[in-house]
Length: 345
Image (cartoon, rainbow, N blue to C red; front, side, top):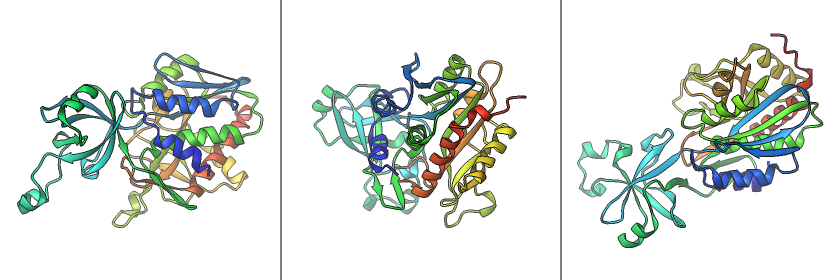
């Protein structure tokens, strides 16, 4: 695992609709791994490896969940509007970075009394998103001079990395971007037209992948994302979507798309052929860029390939190096063999 690259990806701000900084980082990293690059109207970064049929689109989204400043009160506290899905219970007293005239670190706190003054009922009540505010630890005048309505707010936490694992905000889906970049470098020569698309606005409705697929008109679409690891205390094993240390997850279905059975069979075949540890995944709620690609044009056969992570959409998302490497390996093997696909459907 290239820790330096992954840390660079997860620590660069880029909430949905504000992906400029992370796009610049990915563009620099992708240079040399593709024949050409372009940025489309919505902001997707498209790397192109020229070749023949079939045209294969890989999509990993660069945007992350976050917030927008929606109100600044007289005391300089910020009220925020969510961009993407959150569990408010995981947000209390976390650190954030507000992208104003410069970057400002702040504290995400609930608008409530100090704990010493709360009743028992109040202590047991989880705050709502509307009750959270950001304290920038600055005088009100300084806040108002440097922060505006609509400024992006990102979760902030330094990555925690060991030889075995990584924990950090925004593995969803900077980890997918990492896998795509590493797979492009690891893959042998590809004879097919290959589009490596690092998409925008996935967290708010698969928007970037949808418009990019209409533009590129791929024959096949592969989304690379994270999925839910349910190997936790108290979890129902019969409802487990995936588990850590069981390898790359080959998606069968989620709430946005049903993977084409022939693509599922092809990825399983490659995993078995190359001795890549893998598991099958059905995600009952949640979708990926595959859902946007599938419905473009007259329709596109798609599949999602995922890295299992724990604690999704928190500041402590966690993945294992072994699962990450297995995912890179499988995507690389698919890239170099796409010309063998039989598109007789």
